[in-house]
Length: 315
Image (cartoon, rainbow, N blue to C red; front, side, top):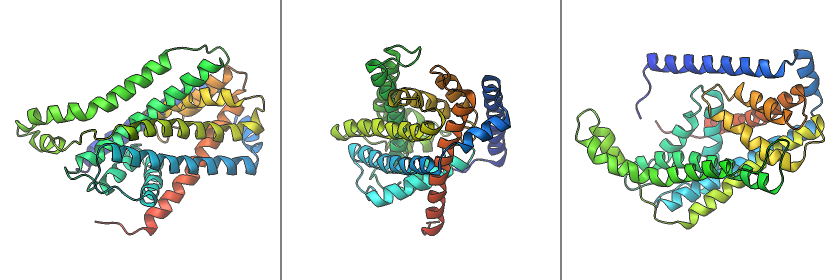
């Protein structure tokens, strides 16, 4: 993959800075929390609760590595990384996704490091990393829909919308390899896109369906783990929040982190304030829970950064 030109990189960073500032402005308008109130709420999070949040976040990355390997197997990877290698790369990728403005640097790293996993070329590795994101989104929406169907949360009633969106994400994931292969000959006909067409011609085919079901199930597990991590923080801030509340509201709030801001700052906090406000959580407590969850992610990301420095890197 060609590195971005400096001017293009600067434009991308400027856009994300503007979106981050806008998201923080939205959060400030929704919350109206003073620094003193926020500091007081953060101070009520017990060290043991934060440690649980960090441990659950780390466990989620382990499950994410399993999901990644399941999708590699489904599309016929001939040389996938070992489980330990996949887990290490997942942690390293989290470091780059957390601290680089683009939010996708870690995905590019994982794909680049596993570009020889498919006999057809690097396209398969990049495709599977993209598909893993789509499966994660489908699991996020599906989990919220299932739990909401069991028990309404606040003013939210059972709805088919989360399932429809989850089905759309899954359909897109399954159709994408076929679309890329079909578009490859058209792109290869033109000089400007010839290289892209040749690369996409190596997009792998789905060879095994069973690992897809496993990948979707693991997506449910990862988002349930995030909800549990948030619940550990909220146990000190708003003890009235139940597991059902967290299983519905946390996945929905995390959809906001798909927006291209810096580390999800602003969008995540605004979503927490809005959604948890529906069940009576005060703005300062909701913001503190969001920042605590982000702090747990930063701890795990720093572990990935340390592994990246310690592990020998290829040129």
